[in-house]
Image 1: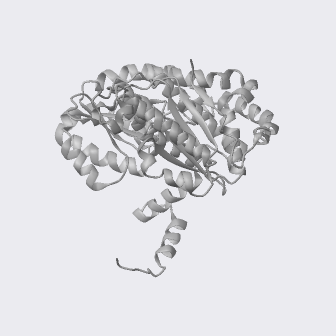
Image 2: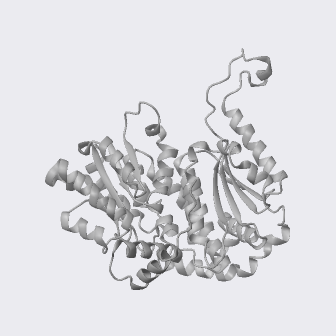
Image 3: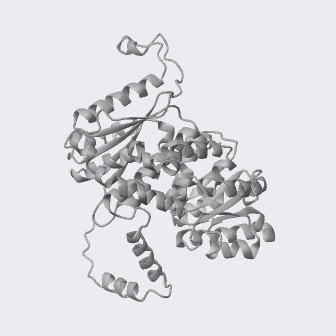
Length: 446
């Protein structure tokens, strides 16, 4: 048994079999680019050259934090989404009633009320804080760091340094300066590893290891998917990541502007938002790309599935299932006659049936659909899926002719925010802000 991509309903709707071969002319150039960028260290998420050092560094840091009851993680975007996806998939106990074990709490916004509530509820003596920023200057994370650092100092005095871990660049940036100045435990974000590709590094794996999740299995599963791309690039045409990229590019070429990520593995629901950042921030460039839409079965059958089935015909779907879900308890034999077909059956049969029904309904509505069918829901399988999607995202970007690693439009918003806050060096942004704010407001009360 293995993880599978099932393609029988992928080239439907406006797609046809001829669309499978349209990316073939670019294959040789993409193979050469892949070979070059792996060799020059531009795709560390794929080759994972950092693994040995990370494991060694983790062995030094983890014993210092393992006895704390809570981890408060400060990060945003790629510094938070992967962590949350891994935690909800493999340590869901913290979100259940009467949880007594370790917990990871993610502060991924600048909501003052939420931060105050979090700090009021946590005992600083039982809490290790982890601040994550590759650049060391992400304003949202740095602002949280300043405030939470003061919170720790007020409770612990000089011992605050024993309960702060930084994950940042190896040599530069403000957080690296802080680590050096205060001798804080720290882990590296490797060069060229952007936030949305960083979940299988210290960014996502330190919280995982703290919670007792098998982080090595996550890495091993990812490695098995990445190995052919790193070691045997000439076989790229047969790799599932290239097949996904070819399909995604064909969808865009035929004006499918949305890509649904529909997970029928409920405990993997947070992989939807993780994938959406990966896809949107990588491929929304130069007027191109498709809008990723996260959905969870069966919850979203009762919320947004009507639009998928009967709205505009502009959607493709990645449909995630698993052959070995927990069966749960069985229905009793004394159910009312109306529900007699459930008697004696395990609860999981309902999820399986509804997943098949939704898949068939989407296909009947002409939605091109690829089924990612996982062998099981363990960490190794999650790591494999994450690597598959990361590789497919990069390859899709190359087929589109854009850079899937940068995020120029996002940087503009950051510069404007810094200018609004009074940071120096943003003369043009200050002028743009003045012009924007000078437009007369048109208000309507409700």
